[in-house]
Image 1: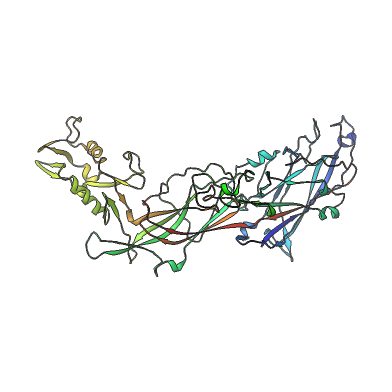
Image 2: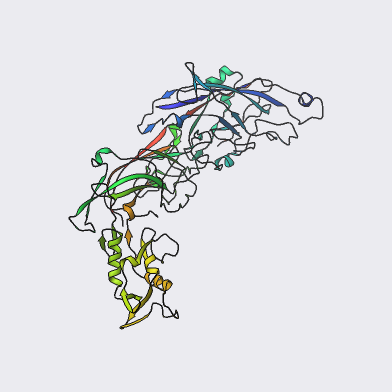
Length: 549
């Protein structure tokens, strides 16, 4: 069911004022007359059945409205001031005021109860509108829970007003703005005001309301895991086994999901959705425009930020919801699943891969590396040369400063440990012990030279403390290989269900037409509007995570 927010705007008592009336008989401010009108706003809710499934109203917090601003424009999208200030006026429709009206402290009331949930409450407010006699705006945009400040906006400027988080204002209310859609080959960003909407009294105005559909600027993402897909201890069975470093029979490996986060998540969205009315269903990959319902399901977004890789991520809990700005760029937004590799008892399992061989843990990995180097690099202890030992080595994350070229952020390379740095190092060449680096004179301890030499050892993958990450590209509604196969679009709810995990994952993820209105001097003029809060459009995605290279 869709929840409706009705806005009845009634412009009352247009007063025909002479120049002397306006400024106390002093020099005239302008050659025309200013009409002072009152706009009565009625906010209420109603239901309408949506012909298709795949929508839901959301939570009470997602429907709250604290205040609203209504922006007025002429047919070309220029700002149409409706709060004309005293001062010199250069031309009709231009003055020192702004082109928006503000309704604050909205108090919804129904059945004696008050609140700010638009789903089932009503509210009334009255605003003062100042325009020139016979001069009326031809387009209107509603923005809820946003603060425009003391300036006027053209329609283009309002589209680009992006200095917002994209989810909610400081009071925690979700920002909403006009729903944008294509009417034929025309992109509709504002609701039109026609001559039929301009009436001489409030009762007539309510018979011809201006309907404004709005939607949330944010999208939301939720990740769920069905309990029946997990073991009795709450783990994913990876169908993998390992042999403990201490020996004994092979043991099964499981993944314990710790939480999730987003990668390449926009913290901004354009205040008005940007679309291209020439988009085709074939190019986008689905029927992206829904003009009978004043909606569209694709957009051109801001460039998504290239987030830093996620290391010590503090993830959302499974079942929790994150709010996010639009991202329809080629740099897909991803869900990153943080997990721990464990055995049946819940003990962390450290798996290492080096030279196409799997090892059980950090120590087993260093033993393997030391065994390949012990006949090349030696430490001098008095008069005795001893081959390099596992405890002389440490694993260093590839994402750290100074990592060798080509080592990925989810890999480790090898350097001297604290023990190794306290030794004097040599290399054995043709039966003779020499300095590790020939160009270092008197190279006795040679720590820097030894570390430089170790960078040539092939890198490894190591799941330290069993920690790992899996990632999922968030799918949109487009067909495979289409422009909209992946993406985040405002007012969509992306419900992602993880059904299975196979493989160890990655230790670190880096991975409008002008309307000429008739002049109505010396008459009261009323405008009525109705705002419909569009439901979240659902996008469901089920995922089986497979082994990743």
